[in-house]
Image (cartoon, rainbow, N blue to C red):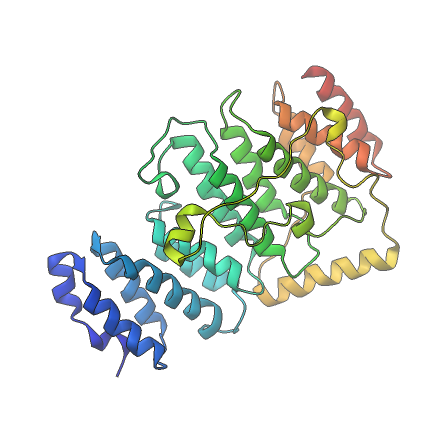
Length: 341
């Protein structure tokens, strides 16, 4: 007996609602060892999209079973490969945007449950924050639509969780696609709407990525983003049944307060070789190329900006001061753009 045999899909679709008894029957089968295949997973997600009225337990059940399918049942178990990441994105989004809070919770839970995932999945999750900031709407703003250009505290916590989830078991700094997503979030924030918590996360994360690409040793993501791997997010927590409440990272007082680690040391050739091997191992497992957020990449991203915002200036200043050694071209670029700002 398949898990979907416990309910009448046609009846549920016709009335547009999922009742508590139907969730209980599905839960009983699932808890007794029934497993999902891809067709089952797609059918459940399709049912979710077709039913605007849902029992409160439905969202939590859906997050659990879809995460279990893509992380543990789809091969290779424990990991999410690029092909499966693309499947998940296609199933939970339309035109690049996640539609419901349950689908967003699935995305976050997959990232936090899998041992490794492709960088593109982390970047896709970060882009949902950019969408919320740009539009003031979407599942992150469900029931609390806001004016565009504001980044809310819960969304900063979500960004931290996403970044830590991807790199929790590796020393790999923020990748290029993730860095591009962070830059997009920062540029979507309206003038005067940034916050110390966001500035801290933005500068630390991108700064560590550029420093790592130039051969410096930097702390793991968990330390860079703050020890917030289990910090709850209200929207996702409501679905997963977690309590709400999270501490924020501290603020910078001045430019001199941006320094996080002191001067970052240069890695030895052996240490750099080990870091390359770790990236290559992750690429092989996830079947996705990992590109670094290098100094050259960052200069190309900021060169088209007539005026840098405060966070971008802080980022350049942070990298220039933290690095034991940087190409002269970058130091000149950072000095010129800081003056121009």
